Length: 424
Image (cartoon, rainbow, N blue to C red; front, side, top):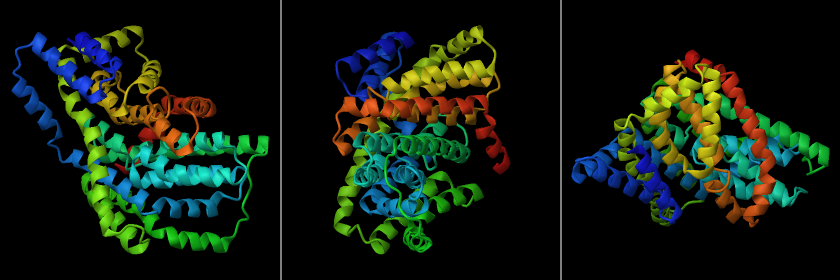
């Protein structure tokens, strides 16, 4: 059954059918061929997969990201980041990294980061001595930080599928996200200093204070979200609702970049993007059931376990597999398909489920910027005006650096697990 499903799914992809439709048709066809399960029961199962309080957080975080994009929040964040680190070698490059860290702590969407912070940073870097290709590649690779740092939409989805604490999964992304951001800054500093790229702004404490005051309303978003979830004041879903309300208030009343007439279009964009993501989730439900009914997770666990019993080696094997999957499959679909298959394997060798889920999301976040199906890659082509081939070539060194950096979390899993143990 699993083999039939995957063949039908790949055939659908080859002929150009949308991913969700390919997966849905493949799943339903497989069930009809091999089982006597009524189609009405399949539809009911699909519906029940979305009838979840946790999944309500997904459209709310998407709406938050769109409100920030339309509300000019990204510009305030960029100006503040420029005042903080713009004076260093490769200053605007580091500003791009820091801006993505802060914006990621509000929106949870890498695509939103490309459309907002990416557009602003590329324009600023190009005007200050940075090659367009380098600026675009840096803005592209840093967009993955929005998927790692809470509130991450993919982390909410993955935690829900794995049935683990969403709060723990979100919090566990903080340290890895900051480490990856630090690696990006170091490489940017080295590259710009070596090749004499870019200009530095003069550090002014007065300007830093002024930009900080302007950015305070925006900077409070991640503080409120993470602080509230860690303290137990509200759940991740309630945090998403608070984020929408707060972002709407500062965009309309404080920064005054959104007027009520724009809200219908903003809500429409939210519904459209939400529908795209959750449609994949709906069609993945019967696929996950097929894998479980077919005993695929146990077979995968037995196969990998036959190769080695070392948690380190198993994670390295899974890491290589996830890098490959991330290149060819949408991250949301990959989560729904792979988590039920791989989670029993890692649990069998005493790997923490939260660690695995966080690492899986981090690795799939890299897939958002890699060819041939990286959604952020194509978004950046539109934003930068570069050809796809040129952008891939410029981004390749960053992909290599990131791939090496992710090995740190396999070798030192305590980077992810220890902070969870401290706070929970």
